[in-house]
Image (cartoon, rainbow, N blue to C red; front, side, top):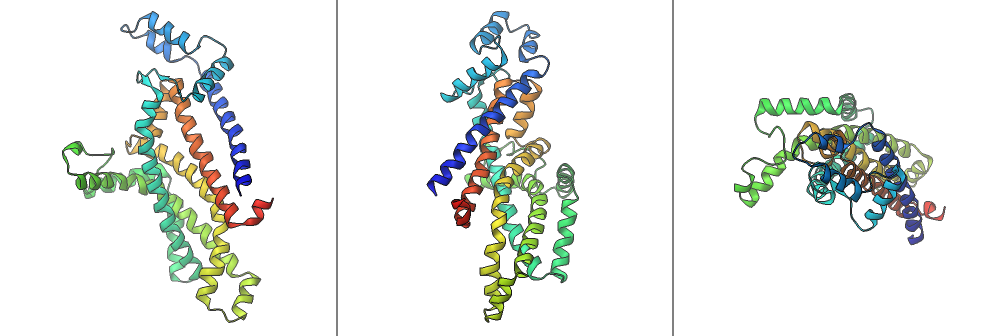
Length: 321
């Protein structure tokens, strides 16, 4: 198993390097740069700008700039954010936890709701519960994420129960410990629902289809013929086989939730990596863009790596291959 994990890790490294190189080339291909905007500010001298250009070798060819950035990354130096005027690691540090909180809450909510509903839909196939769950799934799949965000924000405005944006209230520092947790939870509800609802609908359909296919297979028929109870056949034997394909989706779900979180963060004013990356791209803050992209890539590849490892544990044939 250790060799299998090592192989997957070695495959992930060149992938991260390729993604970072493409992103670095693309950001350099866009016309203009952050220093053009800095030169418009009379409070910033030309000497300061030249100092930054020389320090980060921004007057060199693009590939030399990229390898200089890589060399600094080895020493955990992500560069300097020219827009925030502080190191990139400090900017990212304030946002990563917020995005992780939103992504993890959406992730757990999605799987905790989708798997039981998918199982119920498969077990009660072609009956009232299946039709109701299928109808709600198709309804949620047909609503775009951004429109869902606006709908939930509108209903929250009408109800006046939930906050309409941000991560905490203005008086957060004055609240007691438990009031702070409650306040954060209230702010988390709408962004979590926006990201999760579409993913829940998709997972329900996949879970239902997988379980139905397994329940109609020959080996399940043989188990029933041996007199094993229907509950044991469904929840022990069939469910284990039906969940295996979902483990592959597990990794993609993390990256999917992250990309969904970026749009939701912007609409719901959640201070995470998504809104940070948007402002960094718009201001052409190159090292902040690269730092945000690198963190996102690690989350994407890390999710797939976790999925591969779980799949290796679930199905020994994959480890042998």
